[in-house]
Length: 146
Image 1 (cartoon, rainbow, N blue to C red):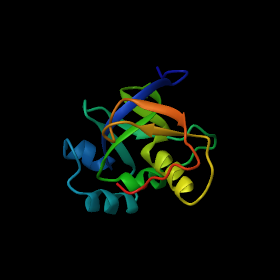
Image 2: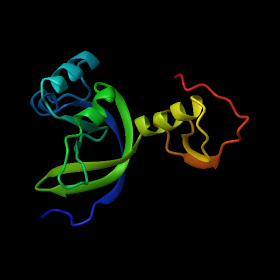
Image 3: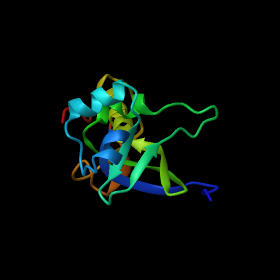
Image 4: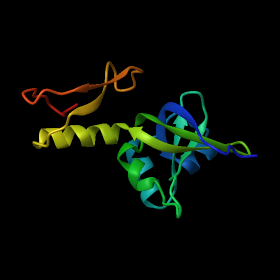
């Protein structure tokens, strides 16, 4: 039986192609190039969590859309993503609400001169747990590199 409403979750793990996640029993991708090549050849990308759970990124919209384009920049890399998890028949699917790409996009907009009143900033490592939403003064400058 599937969950009727997704439950909020934060996931840390590697983005890799689904075939390798299942057939090779990997704990992390062979390489970024390999994960990208498989994704471009049509293999759906998944998130393999640190605990070993495989999460299929899905859209919450109907009609639905593939999520490879959204997660392709992270193929072969470790990620932290938050969203809603749906489970059915032993499979887990994740509707990603916030990922590092979204945060980076916000930072790039600010760097290009856009004005924002709030931005989510991850404190500590890229996979840290603490995030804060706070105003950014107009005079504040920062680098989006790294």
